[in-house]
Image (cartoon, rainbow, N blue to C red):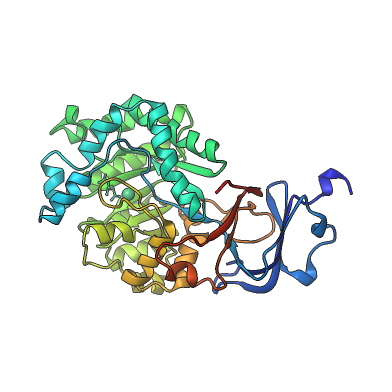
Length: 409
Ligand code: NIG
Ligand code: FE
């Protein structure tokens, strides 16, 4: 057999959860996955395995273990310096997230630490966090800027994020979140800062091709819907898709605003109204659920899960890994919390961390086990998909492949 025709990887005797259809786990008992050139060529029953797959460069007998698409964490802020453990203590003593933000802590305190860090330092710190996600089955991570809030620091964060992807051999999608908070040099001049985001920062980011999408924090402690719309217009003019931190602490019509700009996703969405849900369904905007932030803020208002289901809005689940509201570095734990707190089914949670997470990133080339898709595959120390959400922690990952290559674990 010529080298070009040779399969790189073949997983045999696996219990597959392909998620290939629109519903259900897509279970295949005694299944196999064969990959070539970083892509899946075959995912289905052992008996139909293509000729030659058994002589792949690497063959793994899974002996009945569960095999799923590698997980996708579609909302993180994992490049930042410093930590906010002190604020955690303040919140335990009764201060609210909003009180702390208004007193100059919160995001602003992480901005101070991140501005002082070099690109190499940000890479090193971010790598450790990304490795933790990978150890739990994640092969694609979205990473936002938003702790620099000046041109150089935002570019540095985005470059660091891209370098993390290259260093680990995983997929990284970067999102420019210049409109995250008001930096001190623009105090009381939010509209001027938004001008700066639109006319200076965003063009600089786009010129270097450093962002795959643009995000904003639309909230009473951050930016108004009008200011957010200006950022989205600027993104649209540069051909960049948008997503939004929407309706996390109050309903500002964020879900509908994201939909109006054909947003990839509206994220958090605890306070999202049924009108917004309808608009999201119409424009194909996904809802990204972030149960780590819900837990850490001791939020009690649940996202409108039933309305998302009824209107057919795809739901994704992500860690929101960040120093303030969600210091969470396990996507499986986020999936478990989505089940326990939001009453997602384990199937919805698994879809939320694979196929719907890909959708929230505008990616159709991963998140399922199907021919032509990236060979991003996880082998688990589990037999049934529900176990991925059932165990809180633990060492469930047996092996992880990104583009057909085994990641060190
Ligand atoms: O997703 N809501 C805004 N941004 C982050 C929190 C950022 C921070 O507190 O550092 C979030 O919850
Ligand atoms: Fe976030």
